[in-house]
Each structure stands twice: as structure tokens, then as C-alpha cells.
Length: 232
Image (cartoon, rainbow, N blue to C red):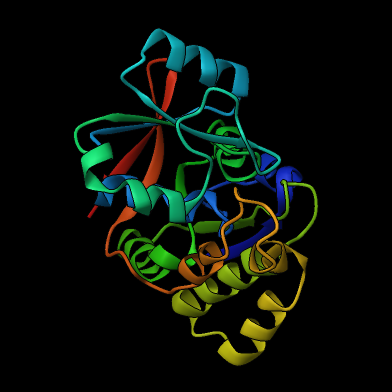
């Protein structure tokens, strides 16, 4: 199994084989929660205007989305696992979720055209992802750390790629050094300072938990929609 490492939007455009699009803060830490709380369907929509239009055409759908971390006007929620958990099962069960984010969702939408398979990656599903990949035994795996707004590398996404590679190959992984690298820098500190309500302090606590869910989420084109499929 050949494992390639890529980063940011450019990396998503260069990804082939089995592709893991990694967005720890926060898109693909949020995605498993939709299914945990009983959502029946999740649609990934990279274009914020199309996401809003889809919500307007289907008012019963839930729109969870942001542009550069700021919640989309007309969305039910921003891209926060804390706010998703506050809503809980009563809000999500048996409903359709539209999800739009600047890094993770756009990365998945980019990679879908060239990848054999697109897996949505974060710490919370990392062990399930490694188990799934080892079971399928693909010849090539591309780990794409989407980074800060898909423009520059972010420590948490690179560290998650390190962790998944460690699980797949046994490569060295130092969790203490990784924690220091992730927490004491801007992409985590913008939450910890608590200055902006749409960046809750609790979000990185959840997003940096390892292996909370035992299922894998993949992206699949169904008609004209990019949908998320839960794989046990």
C-alpha cells in the first residue's frame, strides 16, 4: 500500500486512489454527529449560494454551514460540534442535513472527480478509517490535510494525517509532541480565547478526541448531489 501526503486545496486536486480528506477543525468532526443523532441523509454542498438555495427550496432540511468560519446567513447552525450537540437527537433525527464548509466539504467536492473513493477524515473516526482501509487493501492511499481555510497547513490536520498513517503502517507517532503542536497555536487558540460565539471553547476539546465513532463516512455522487454514506 502506497501512502501519499497532500495538503490544502491544491492537494485535494492532486489526490488519487483511496483519498482521505481530513478536516479536524471542524467539518469532519461534525459529520459523524449528524449520523449519531439520527440524520437520515447528509448532502455536501461546496457552494454557499447553492447550499442556501437548497435550504430555501426544502425548508424542512437543516443547513449547517460557514464561509471562512462565519456561519452562513440563513443557516440553522454554524459548523460547530458544540452547537450540534446542544441541538441533539430531537433536532436531527430523520432529517436531511446540508453541510457546507470552506475546507473539508470543498476538499471532498474537489477530490470526488479523481479519487477511487473519498473518505471523510478526523481524529474522532481515525481508527475506524484505518481498519476500513486495511480491510479494502487499496494500492494507493492519499491523505489530504485540508488546513486552515484550505489555504495553508494546519497542525491539527497534519497531525491527524500522521495518526492515520501511524495506524496504517506503524510509523512513529508521539501524542504529547502532537498535542503541544496543535494546541499552542492560532487554529486552536481562536477557540480557546472564546472571543467569538461561533467558535466555542468546547469545539477543540471534542475535535481532538481520538476514535469516538466506530463507523466510516464516505462521499458519493448520487445524481447531482454529493452525499455522505455511513459504512460500518
